[in-house]
Image (tube, rainbow, N blue to C red; front, side, top):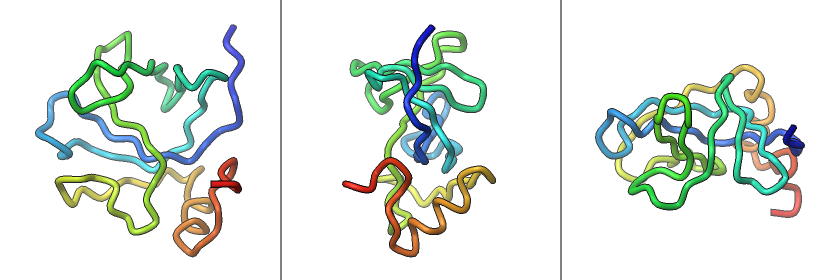
Length: 110
């Protein structure tokens, strides 16, 4: 069984089936394994893959592609659209503190 590291508040966007940066997006708590190659999110297991055009993780079960990255304090998480992320309730307090200038949990050193 994979050992998962502390949860991180991340920006997650679905890429499959949507034009560039137009897919639904979330500010969510994501669990990564020790090598950062596997992420658990919303009941899905996502695997890092570098060979995709506009995504960095994919769901082996559904083949959906996702972009996962640290959120931006200015809210500009998508490069080419103004999609607003849904903020999951379990991530809200940490994300709002981050927007106000605090470090994200697990990112105190950058």
